[in-house]
Image 1 (cartoon, rainbow, N blue to C red):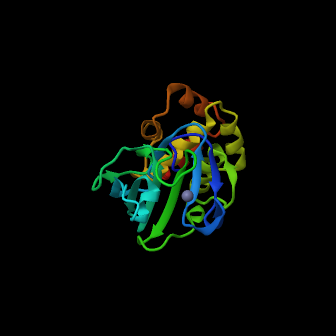
Image 2: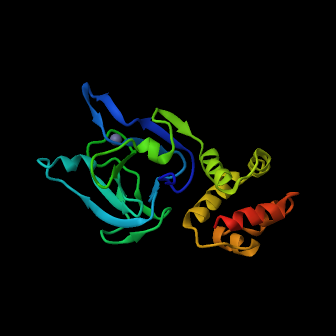
Image 3: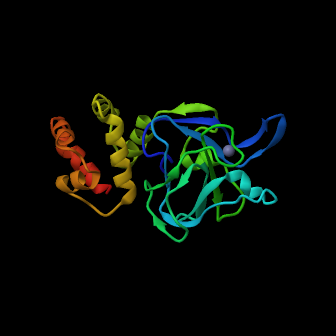
Length: 226
Ligand SMILES: [Zn+2]
């Protein structure tokens, strides 16, 4: 799974598990997240939209979710995105990880703009969403740059020297995210030009990477993971 926002760092404002909200202790089935740089919520998996709706009948506890989208993932997990201000997809629609599915909002039982993110394996009961996102289940702030850097470095077998080189680049965060998304999409082995095309790299990014001493090794490792 990828981060559920199209860009920027993410704050975890409430963890999965028991918590006390407005004096009432209850089980929180998801993770509450706030995007620092964008309100655009993206699908974390490839799959098919199961629900895209709002329930306004307060006899139905689902009203608490406000505008919500549920995606039945190809990985067998159904992911719920709740309290959206807008829904951008329809039930039955196929989505790819990274596609915008809605806008973070404050609809339903919500006290401030945030995304209630919930993972239900096999669409059964809610599991620890933090574990599925490879995040700590704690109130904290996640660096988008390091989140995607970790994923790409692990997938490609890069050294920490490569991380440091890329992190020195002004758009490092954007570069790591583009690489992670392209690796996720896995269309099959690519050459240097193929990697550039699939990642949508701009000429200055290519120039920057080509200046790296092990540039050919870097392109090869990337191309093998796409
Ligand atoms: Zn929540």
